[in-house]
Length: 319
Image (cartoon, rainbow, N blue to C red; front, side, top):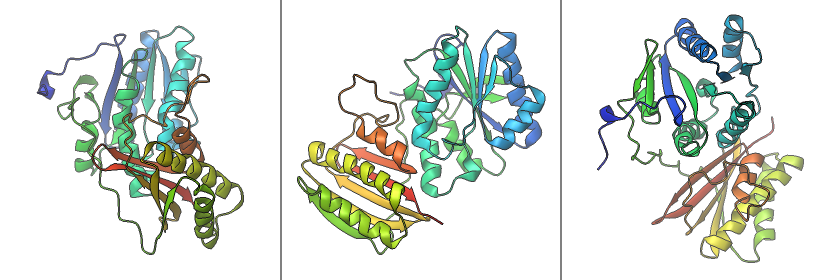
């Protein structure tokens, strides 16, 4: 039985990962909550990593400039790639933890700049996965500002991903958080018509790449980006053959100014963090999905024991 959210204990800083949602409305509320959070950290001798959209960085720097304990990180390279964000946070936190200081973070995803419904869903999934990614790691505190103006339904979804909620300068357990609830994915959209379909098995990887090339060339995707998509597709399809019953189905189509390659098989990916953390030098296997996240603009993964696995690779088209 799941315990009532109202009984969720408050986790003091220093005893584990603390994930806190800060709903705000307007620039002034954003500054009040985030600047107060940073000053609390500095008063306690803690370092702070701030990863927010560029306009918010400008606001915060006017209040609290960069120094040895407050670092504003450039999120340009990862802001629109949800699958890379957990790995980036691990690197940012480890850099400061190596200095022997307790660490706090402020992270606001680019919700309003999301380029598709799929990207929005993956950003929300990222917030939920953060709780799993850092559950057994070093103690640190992440504050997630969220512009709640006119976002009642979205705010309820966000509260399910955050064990704690900040309001009026105080932190309290989030009434909407359920640690046992699985992530409620929005169903994947139906492939856009027309789409091509190709059934592949052992020995069919060259033909699979040719199918992708034929679709990509019609859409103007070529050179380096096409080679990167080939690498990612080969890794995913090889996993289908190796772990998904020896056979898979490729579908390709264009949507939201992207080429989408979908792979279906009967395998099951048990680890929801698969592909989101950089493989270690001695790790055996597990590199294919990580490589796909690095090479593609968006990766969607849906996997259940009953229905198997669906992986979609999104590559932005030129122009």
